[in-house]
Length: 96
Image (tube, rainbow, N blue to C red; front, side, top):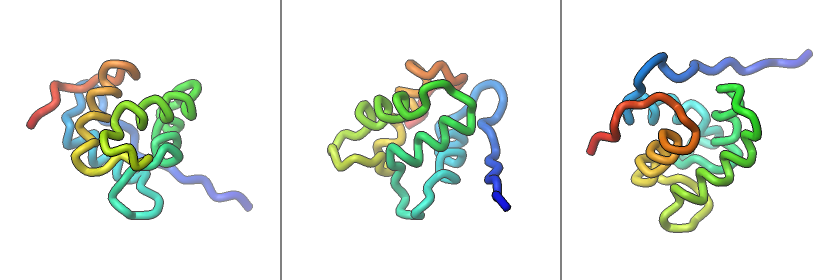
């Protein structure tokens, strides 16, 4: 018997940085507080985006300032900006 995981989708309309972080945190499978390319791919798949693996790879590359292969706490803002610009997700402006 297969078990399916159901995730809450992004809130409709404009999404704040905090809402984006909360949504993204549910895909942190290992609970380390960082988002890997694989975890981001799962998040993008939940939105039914085409080529989720490719988009996840590009997003992690763009957001990963310290080049450790994961999106850490401060880098989530960079990921939010990338998602807004390149993935065309509806979001309000990034707040400091």
